[in-house]
Image (tube, rainbow, N blue to C red; front, side, top):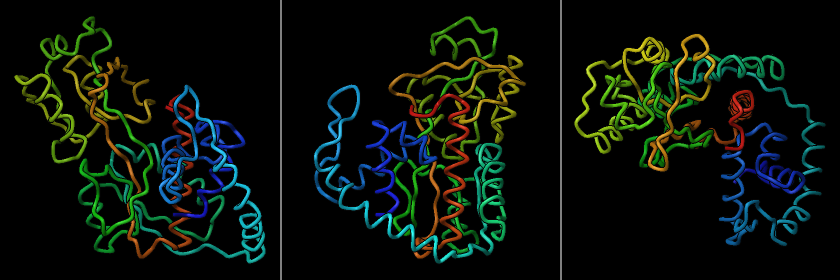
Length: 299
């Protein structure tokens, strides 16, 4: 359990909600929720009453915050006094679908706050990037976590659970998922990727008789094809800016929609690495900015 989680707890108590804390801490709401659950697991007791429309802190939440605050403030003063310089090289892998969303903001944050830290980004598929982290070729990677959970040999930091949605041509008039699959060709996303596999599993179980003839490994290419009326596709899309150039309509799949768990994976031995922690903070901040811009923060 990371000590920064108690700063997040203070932010939740100050703001009164997970969304407010996420905005203050430059995290996603799901990351804030995950941190609170980890503290609850450690104490073996709930910190919040979640029975109503909004969360309400239990007396334990205030006790924990009161007990930790003096120590946290003292540690922060020691950290500022030591003025440790974060420097070095971090080799970061990012899956192709998240590259335009995360890389610009992450680089901006690192160059502003840690000018002596060099980031060397590489794109790839989740499986290959995870193997590269495991072998030591990369220090960390932003990947889609396997549906059954990632390797216990690695450290998995949840970033966002991204619900997959159906994208259809802008002039489509049907609203039924079944009718849309009957009317349009299904454009597959590369089934060797985790999101492609999840999409194929959904179509196989819900549509059954639909077989996609086209299979592409670029979400941008798929969006362009759908926008031009060449078919429909299942994608997870955090940043929808590309859809301004190639308009599509989004159709939600409801409670049975597949979802991609995006995580930052690293080696457990590097858990206390200051450069890696700086990159983790920059990635989380860049994602939070994108979510706020897209109006998705707190969902």
